[in-house]
Image (cartoon, rainbow, N blue to C red; front, side, top):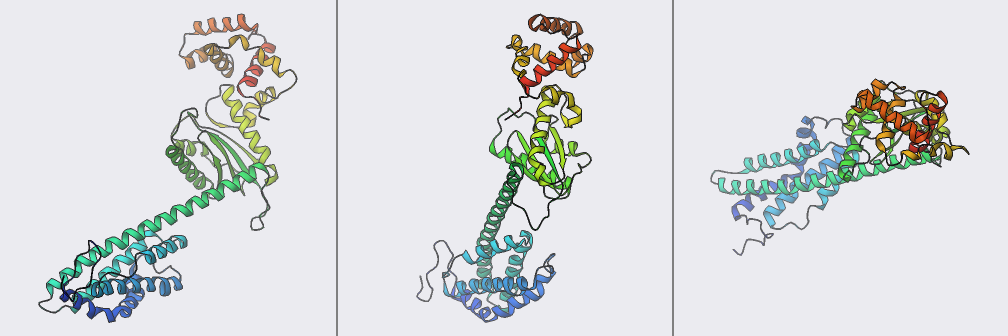
Length: 401
């Protein structure tokens, strides 16, 4: 290495004395170049004009000045005395302030272009090789800085999103438990409580698949209601609280089915006049969904009025155990239980039952006869039909304590 060449970073190409001399000519122009960027070139970027004045005139201008000076000093004097921490910290700030990533990266690209123009203007005939060296160094610097800025921005954005998600979950949990503290900024008012049951809930889902499902459902809910929906979900479903409304949007069932990407979604909703009623509504909607599934109703949107009798029959009492035991003889015969459930759901229409079970109507008759033989329940008797329905509900949708 020549005596007048300072040590370089490992892997960084050494600049010739001519290239360092050319960079040195532009070093005194750093403040001028930064002002031109902040007050001229950056103004052409879409969205830049809407940024706060202090961000444009102080933060971004200072970052541009630092970047220009760092490159030129490194080119002239050798290895930089500092790393990329400054740019990473500023990128995290921009993410926290909500500045779009595309706008942030374009400021860096414009700065690189501005510096290239300054170097090219300063170059004299015969200094083309030196200019080419500095161009290579500029490309390498751009790659390092833009990579570090992007990574830091996305890391901060992910951390902010996780924080917002956890705040939503905590707020939802407190409202559903009835432990939410009064919010002075949001006066108490109506709320809508939903219970979702995802299709194929018993299937194993990877954590990544669950997170994607939750993101799709959250996005669909926020768009449908036009406000922030507070969801507390797991792999099987869960509750959603929407403060400030008592109206269920049109097509909410279709919207959520599209988000879940499956026809088996079950949904129930209940409106309450104030947050004090949210825990009760949460229990009610969960039971309505369980009862609708237990009595064989097709997936979709369920209301209490749709299962009013079944809801009443499923309430526990001293006789609940004896009623549920009427179906004990069918244990180990899921075909008979499924036939009974479907037949009652179809209001004892044997042809409709046969169609849903892909059976011949005579096969349905044979199964119903076997059910009567094993349980003693005559489905032609209204009283026995009510007992059979109550027994199914008490077995399949027990009320949780």
